[in-house]
Image (tube, helix red, strand yellow):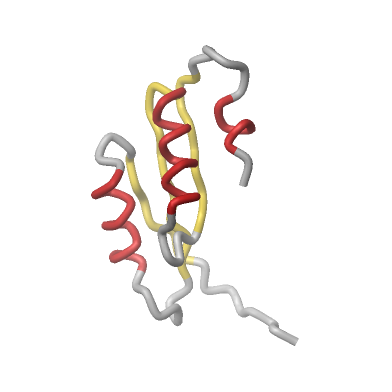
Length: 86
């Protein structure tokens, strides 16, 4: 995760920022990334990607992000594709 990729050139303002992640769990690095996006974009969408078998439900993770970043639009997206750990 590199915040410089989100903020771009110092002082540049962007129309719409998109932050995608699992937020499993939501930590300080995620917060810094969303903060960088909200400070340099007119509007921000945060997409929380989740698999149905994960131990922390997607609605809980969406709530975490919404409570810390109330100006961002936070949406959930399923990702139930099979995972081959072998």
